[in-house]
Image (cartoon, rainbow, N blue to C red):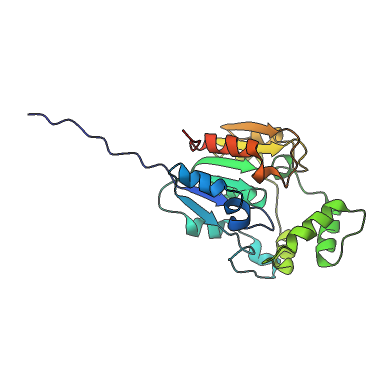
Length: 238
């Protein structure tokens, strides 16, 4: 007598969440409820605090931040994961996907776009670092925002300034061609890092969602981001 073949239940991949500069897993993903929604959908969440943030060590030497992917790799399980990153977290996950394309099966990049493939404006970067090391000029609203984030409870402004001073080269077309996993770029139409199309068009298997009326800092709390990211990783409520 033949017995029916019983298929083993497919366990969804864990979802790695990586915050932006000046944030943490708790302040970005847990406080917004995004991590809870993933868990409600039956997903295992792996929250990462990048070096210099949250509960991670906070060295003051810019050279210590040359490879931010190391802390993420240490947190990863053996198998592939889905990954969601915002801003600095998205840039770091993109670097990981370039260097270790087998580790990520679906990738959400929020709050990055044109800035990932172009060198930072030297004068704007100088003003930002100068503001973090002292006080921003009264007419420099962008630097004032970054200083406010750096001075949030639990943050170390010197460590966060060191991150800003680290060496970082834009991604090349050759590097981006290595990112084989399905990828979704999500960015607000008022985000200084945008637009998203120059990045999405260079990734082999990418889509783009542009959030109307959303700036950079509002992205990870925006309902449009929630819906697009949860749908992409297969975690929308039934």
